[in-house]
Length: 355
Image (cartoon, rainbow, N blue to C red; front, side, top):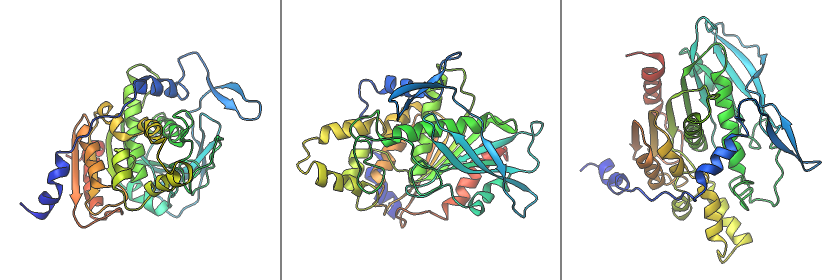
């Protein structure tokens, strides 16, 4: 037995029970109706000032402003779209100059890591120069140009992981997941995009969001014919937000330390521990994984102390479709350079038809 096999032997057998609450499915069906209201009806959002419900039409139309850049092969835009709660999400949209309604290209959505942002043009050119259209948007409230327009009934510790923990309806990642499905749909409806060839990717938080959003779209498309995007492939690098209680128990650093501080400041005896993890269960990737059937490539660093390897294997075990996990024994929670070539080949085979 080699070192990698020895290190992963226990992880490969680890498949914890799902932690879905009885209303998990109905909770997300109701939430998705905010982004995909029934045909002929309007969606709604809470008007913070009047505390009344405002009816409105959900938009899937990206507002694009051309951004000057000295490359002829790629057209670059600053992108913006209004989220279901009225927050303006901002990012980049890179388009191969040959793309058109007559020459539709595969589309990629890149989700960024925790406390990061939409990224630099240079990061996205890697994909646009291969022939993909690439959409990369800020996650609300983090370190980009996009605010978080929601109000919360209490504060949080440091970042976003403990924001809105009082209830699943209020929890921060509820709106983040809904933003993400709207972003994917906005790309799929572009006239220059082949909506049957959409790929999602990201590291850490970005990989986790990609999994959750794709699962929500696949499950909801069974009931809602308005959903047009077809997720053909996902690369989830060192994904965050999986097997949350185990992640909290085993973490050594990273965002899960925020929950430790939250307990210290708000619940030092863990008297509300059960309720807190019930709230988190609505957002735990292992509970979404059985809904997802598209091909998924996952990377894991076996020295990762922010997203413990056991939690990533738990996600992998619960995925319902074609799946591959690649373990890197000497990497922690970091961008794994050697994985990029495998990521490129994985997407090319499924989205560019390079076989």
